[in-house]
Image (tube, rainbow, N blue to C red; front, side, top):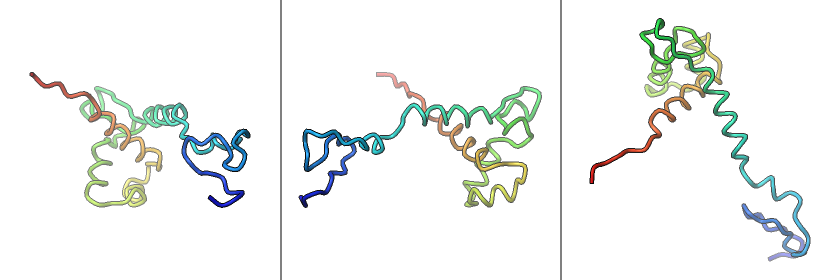
Length: 114
């Protein structure tokens, strides 16, 4: 290893040339799991379900734009920016929320009989 270079490992907490010295920037290499979870929860507040609107299907921010409509546009090959042009009442966070909602809906344990 070259003298003076720091090791850029994910969990590195010590400087490579001074093992007794703590690397003060090691926390920058770690992902903030709690912050990501909070952001996910904030995104999911954009998804609303009202039994009297759109047959109770999940919609974006109380509008009559269903999550499935956004997902269908993305699945047909549109980019998120193109979806926003197609549905101008939406914001980029709405598209992200639709994707996060779909991911959470299919992320559940599958039980099988032995």
